[in-house]
Length: 188
Image 1 (tube, rainbow, N blue to C red):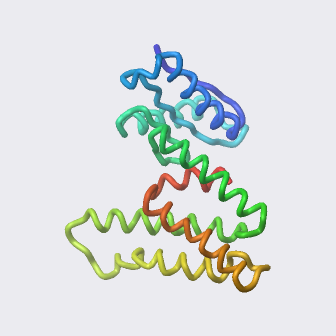
Image 2: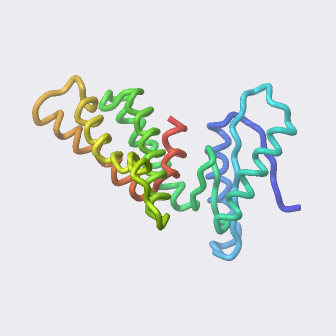
């Protein structure tokens, strides 16, 4: 058939998937009717190949049902152009982490905000809203609180405020990418 099944280190497979997509686009002369969809499953080294095949096939099916020309990673699906944007965000977040603008705890908190944003989206799509479901609507306030409290901990004054403003870009990313931001976060 026309499917590929590759096994390798998770980070290298992600890089290779992006490379393969770009190379394939060149090969088909950027014909937007001929595309690649990818499904990546991440497992421990001793996982049976059958399980690897089954979960990666499920991820691939998720990509194809999302309109093809997509990649599914960490159970989140994105079109390839969005995936490239998410990789740029990954670079930015990694720089923040390396320069201690944020810490590992902030990464875990952002993961919680991804879940809250996803719940908010589902709530907004639903016709009926219950009070007990509205907790997820607090993600923006909780994000702001976490960023102010934790971003640039070693800085003061204008430098700290500059870092806070920079890290608050996460709110825009959550609005724009929703659960797909997990692709970025879980790579870090």
